[in-house]
Amino acid sequence: MITQEKKKEGMYESVVKQFEKAANAMNLDTNIRKILAATNNEIVVHFPVKMDNGDVEVFTGYRVQHNNALGPYKGGLRYHPTVDIDAARALAIWMTWKTSLAGLPYGGGKGGIQLDPKKYSTTELERITRRFTYALGENIGPDYDIPAPDVNTTPQMMAWISDTFMLTKRPSERSKFAHVVTGKPVGSGGLEGRDRATGFGVVTSIQAWADWKNTTLAGKRYIVQGFGNVGHWASLFMKEKGAILTAVQDASGTIYNADGIDPQDLLAYTLTNKGNVAGYANATSIEPSTFFGLDCEICIPAALGNQITEANADSIKASVIAEGANGPTSPGGEKILAERGIDVIPDILCNSGGVIGSYYEWLQNKQGELWTMDDVITRLEKQLLISFNKVVAASEEYKTDFRTAAYIVAIKRIELAYIQRGVFP
Ligand code: NAD
Image (cartoon, rainbow, N blue to C red):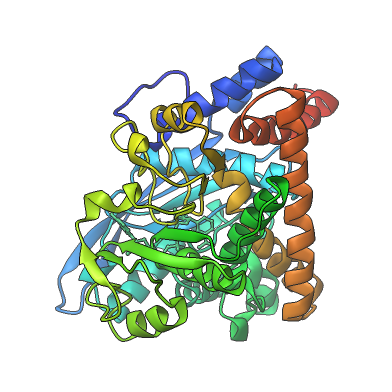
């Protein structure tokens, strides 16, 4: 329950504060407020997996299903040491708002396993993923709850999930279940362009912000935290806009070059360096704590939650924060940004390209179609601009910030569904 538990400062506390702010601003129906303040289901599974050395390790996996008023639960699976029930709750709740804002027929869910994947071999990760899928059993399904990739989970892992889930079904029915997950490799029912959908969406949102501000992206300096799926694709699309990447921070270190870092060249380097940016020759390694205070116009946090907080928001030089990550800005940090006139393109809008791409993959699987990259990118851009314009309109109507406006648009859609259907019995 959102309202009954108050734990350590974290993403969960952020999502609660953001929800309450929007609910107050829009004068949300009290009964619907109670419903949305609770998560529907919280599944915790403990499952044994045989390691390469023959020992058995027991893992804990989570799946939180927040709300499904608009359709099946939808949201990623994260493999990271910070995954716990609070993180899964916060991320599930964000998914409900994100899918609603994007106009999709989905609710919100999220989950994962508390582990550091770097400590396991590929064969161990395969057994962990398959056994987690088996442990979740009927708690997921193509018309019930549809996971996708998130931090440290890959298209390959989605293929293992899909395969394992299908194998639990009768042979004659198996192919009907391939879309139990999205973000699969293209050869296994995946969507052309799903890999870049989130990064493309981030840059489409930044471009929409620039148009709204009557400015251009060419020549603007930007910094990126996280050079994984979201960070590297966003950087490649920013390059197409003529913007200049001056710093990148990831789990391995922070690199800087005032004259610009070529994202394509950096990507090629990371592919030979276990995905890490540290040691890249065409930039200097700098102290990680200085990253958010670097001189730039655009800042793209695309790694973990709670990165921009009261501790560093004062030092930020960017004019806009484009939230590629989920929950990178804490409410305390956001208050300081607002006082300093720094815009925030909120996560539920900025990184929604990923779940919109997942929806296209799901539709493609359901209908037995094959979409082209052009179909995907064109539709994605259109859908993202519709969301952006709705958020701008709500921020003007309610005289509020973009995040609260995005929440209001999202919550109104769910509120309407409850008002129309009523509460059983
Ligand atoms: P990823 O695993 O591909 O990459 C994560 C990146 O974050 C890596 O570069 C890693 O080194 C970096 N990182 C990890 N810990 C860090 C730390 N302490 N400091 C700095 N950097 C650190 O993950 P991703 O899929 O790119 O996801 C990144 C963020 O975007 C997450 O918040 C995720 O929830 C969000 N997101 C992802 C998608 C998607 O489609 N992949 C969609 C929407 C939102």
